[in-house]
View (cartoon, helix red, strand yellow):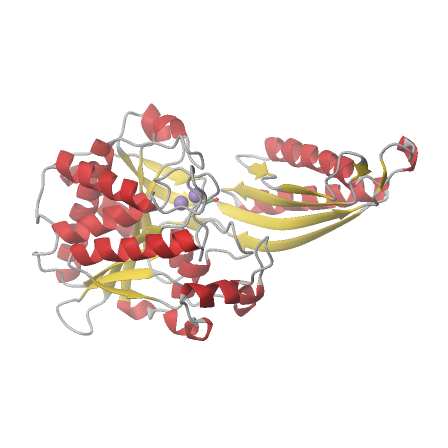
Length: 415
Ligand code: GLV
Ligand code: MN
Ligand code: MN
């Protein structure tokens, strides 16, 4: 790789690297790359190769996070981390996650002949989307020492446990505790990510600096009714789990709309037995509830859960809820955010500050070290959708901002 390149060329390199990683999918014809799947394995290996090309020493931690490291000037120098994730949602866009990993790799490449007063690490996390297992930012949480051992026993839709999948991937369930970093030796964490919203595009800006990440609650819910013959059981004598669930979903939308700045989503709903002529016996659905204000979110969760219980009682079905995420809103670190802002200015980019509605690995790293994020404009604010799209020039602006921000932090750390 070249040591320096003009902005357009850097952007083009970023786009080519992201397109290359996007070849690794579990589903032909669309991008789905779930944690610890064969596509994740292939993408992790491809990411490791990109890191080696950038002059980084590559290792893989016990949960499959790929780490590209350049040592600091002394063995006790602290580490500045730059990262994002390489897992995806189902039928994903190609930028959510890989953009941040690739920007970090290119920044390390561009800085490779410059001395820095800290070690630099680029991280490619594997479990940000939390689509496959009932986990919560498992791979980045482990870095902060917050991996919950019971997550290993959580199972995917096919019945495979995280422990089994990790072993098949080449990971090490016994080595997870050792992933935790020493906060005293960790300078901070920077993450570049597509905005996944429309604000930067509306303001005609390539990049923006994140103020805080919204809090989130997630749960898996089960409604149990009774199967019956769709032709013979009179309407008033049914315990239809799906009809009850429909009322619950309407409540989720109504309550989410009424709560200030909140959003509430049922993204998965499975019906059993799922036959045209059988009254539904059981549903399983998910809840994803987010807000910038933790008190607003807590009240909304309570309203939805107690409302679902009331609907179940009235309809003679049962409602059970298993909460697997209750994440407070996370403020970004002011010093690192200011470094990103100065970095953008030095790269010739105007910025604004904006909050993040989506969750990110920076939520987990903020429990370990100062953390900050740079958002990159995306077309139409579209994300979690194969139509996700960014400009090469904006990717170049993000890399140059990151390089300058690392230099700013280097000057600060160097005195
Ligand atoms: C991660 O993409 C999220 O769901 O916020
Ligand atoms: Mn993401
Ligand atoms: Mn995502």
